[in-house]
Image (cartoon, rainbow, N blue to C red; front, top):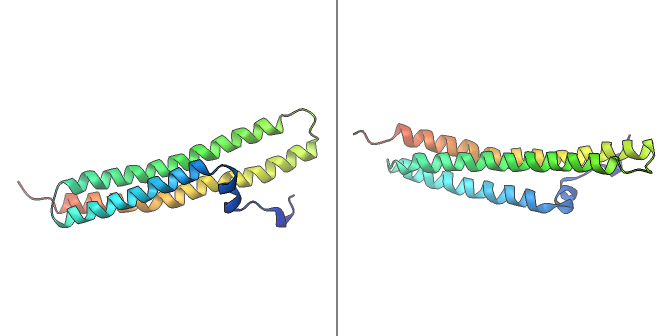
Length: 135
């Protein structure tokens, strides 16, 4: 078991390799902006609101996917490091336990940050479809 003072943190997950988590955050923020613009178009009864809402929902899904990709990439790296010859069984167990906990952060971060644009985008697309001008 790991010493509780050595638990991985979200800051450490950013420090190890920040590019994927930063990319998920940028895409999620872009999705929120698209969803808000889609809501404005929905209020104006423009059909463009549906497309913007769908694009925002897809941006949210992409942020979740990036988090999942980084999670599995880190798990693969753990197995690579654990297979290095010369490590004792105790060292391998410690590496696997600590790094598996640390590898969960990108997944949680991507799911957490991707949920907002996903829900806002779905709401925006639904509102735009409900308020669409009749033909």
